[in-house]
Image 1 (cartoon, rainbow, N blue to C red):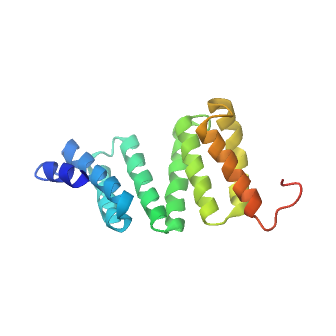
Image 2 (tube, rainbow, N blue to C red):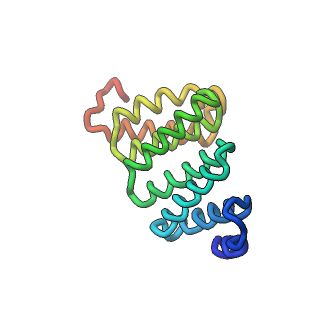
Image 3 (cartoon, rainbow, N blue to C red):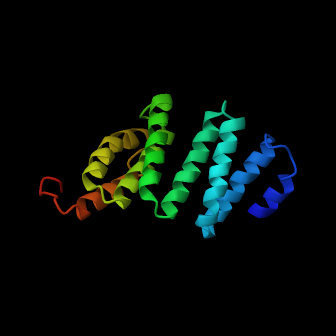
Length: 166
């Protein structure tokens, strides 16, 4: 389906909205089964959005998020974390800590910290995120529960944990 969408809009100008969106759809479709093939498509999609849609911060952020997810899928966790931290910082500066998008970006940062086994950073970061998630989304929201689970994972896997941590 991604290829069909891309082929439909390929003949349009590079700046065409549908062509730009079609490339992103193709990259995300490829990411599901062939992330190594998706990476250059998502990189090109981000470059295209930066060239032609620089006025739309949301589209740029979404493209960067797609690229970070693909890098994570490929095991390029350090690179993914750099992008995710940048996305989080941008959300913090534009939306503030108590916004669902910021909390979701924070959850992605936390997951990357866990993947990299950066237990201390993960614990500290998640402990900073949880109050905002609980207040804004409630204690039973999926994102809040994921953050809580990620904190439990960090605590359980940290070989230097103390009784006070638990």
